[in-house]
Length: 122
Picture 1 (cartoon, helix red, strand yellow):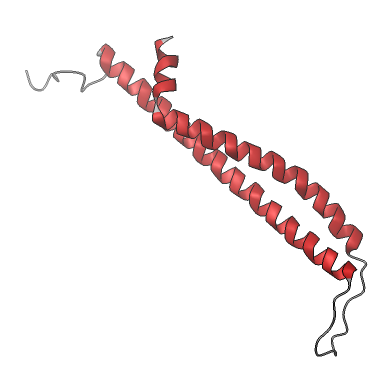
Picture 2 (cartoon, one colour):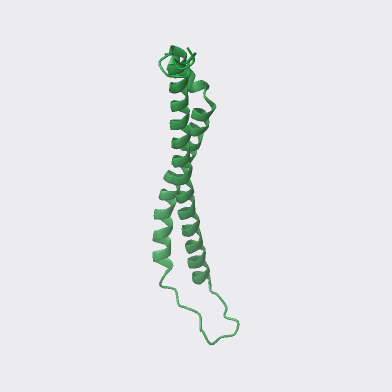
């Protein structure tokens, strides 16, 4: 019980938990949107291409819709990558915080060197 209490009081563990939760949320939301925009990119890919000889080609609505879908797909891929990084950082912080709490508990119990006087001092 005291270990769980110490873990909830650890700033590293709580910050890690927050980052992990935000990262997982980003990954889930990003994957859902990636599927949606992949389908939209495929659906709008059959749009006619502009004339390469035209000096100032005009874009039609289909081309604009395709360009927006490609941009949104790239954005949500970035969201997924960022979410994975945040989740990894959060997991690392939680592990470091749990290790720190464990070391403090062992030192308090006198199981680790450094808990008091070392045998070399006596």
